[in-house]
Image 1: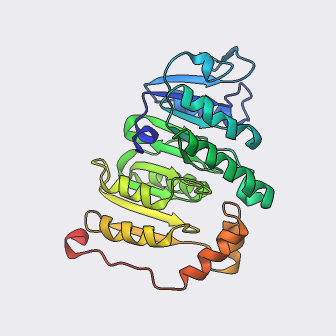
Image 2: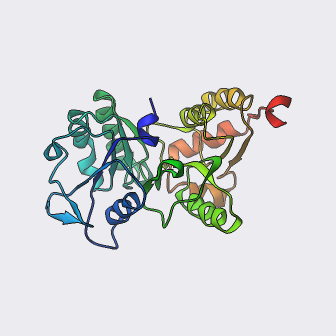
Length: 278
């Protein structure tokens, strides 16, 4: 179900822009730097962006799209789900912020977006995330400064800033990543599904996780226990202190953060088997 996030044949950047300082411009530039599939910038003004024909809407593309990367104002995203489904898209990376982290109105808008996505069978990563990177496939569907070298470590992080830091460190220390996934607010796809996907990924030999909150801690616990029998896992839970919780609030709503911190007081560790750690 998640393959479209990592090996899409066609990607549309909704919110692509010719303005060099914009997030949409950075996403398109990163994709052009290595992605070999069909690439469609989408901007209501049309025209040309970074040498590519820009389409006024998803419907104007006139061809199937596997993945959309979205960097537009939040209020326009719920109705976009129907447009995505109409071109056969089943996966969307929502880069845009301005949802649950903004309070009750943002929570309502995020719920509306998720409901629309589910109605049209579109899976979401994000919102408020850096994006998804698959170095071995040349896919950098993010607005980060650069892609990491290809390697065997699957990185899953709620924080995009941490991914950016690790990419810089990977280049300096000459190690690589099989994938880097920034989950942001985890409105739909969350830790358990990504861990399960990485556990079955031939390019991934080990998994590194940074999380600020677990919306479904039991599912994460069970998935980690199963995955640790196949591959080594290192996981760090952030937001345990008051200062950390304030930092985590950039991705999670206050109610979700409080619930997660209460649950985190209970032991939730699982030891890998001897075969996994050898």
